[in-house]
Image (cartoon, rainbow, N blue to C red):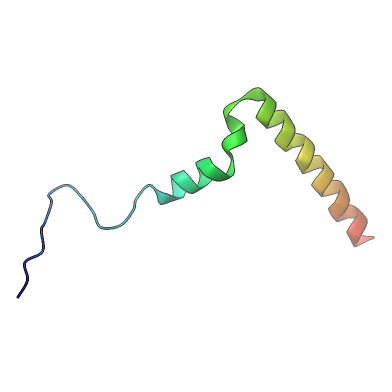
Length: 54
C-alpha cells in the first residue's frame, strides 16, 4: 500500500481557478482605458443583438 503525502492546510482542489479565469477574461478592467474599450464593445454588441432580433 502506497502512502500519500498529506500536507496540513492544503487542499487538492484549485480554490483560485475561478478568480484566475475572471482575471484572464476581464484583464482590461485593470485600467480606465480598458474599461472604456469594453463598454464601447458592449454597446456595439447590444446594438447588433437588437438588429438581429428585428
